[in-house]
Image 1 (cartoon, rainbow, N blue to C red):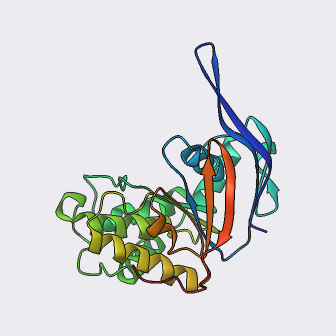
Image 2 (image 1 turned 135 degrees about the horizontal axis):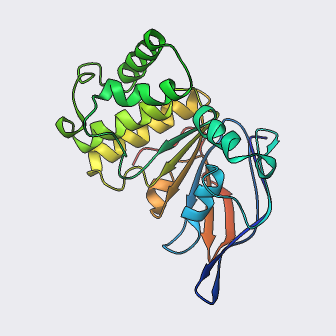
Length: 233
């Protein structure tokens, strides 16, 4: 079991008011699954993603990642886990604007202490894998939105993470670029990559193997989409 959430809750204080963002979440995700977490704004999707990505700790309950209780880890250990075990893909790409595609993909490898020649080799391999072998030396502002998201995916895969987290990965893309990114996720899933994707769009969620619905901080549905190889939009 890669992800094991046990009675996880998250409460924020907004002045004198306690906001219960997550309420007693039980969730298990096996290695190799492609899971979409769907819900409207305010349902708790982002809070859940932050906990899964070890960016935030739960207020109550336990989060076990790959057999390790994250609640028992120091901030330094969580930083290492984020670098080594988790890849992040965001709606707004979060690329460094004054760096090339190659530089952006090298970044997590550098933080992991990988030698520079190995960084370059791995980054070139990944950029070729996502179809950007002819854009390696281009800067972020020289790339389309779809190309920037491909760079972000390559960067997320740099350290061969156990878990790929995607937060509304097609939200800033045109329909064709969005379809291309979802096709790429489907291909990664077939290769065995564990993917958890946050979305508010039921059609995008249908591309996953499993769909989990959140409402008011609770899981209200957990169901198979009925296909091992996700359907095309």
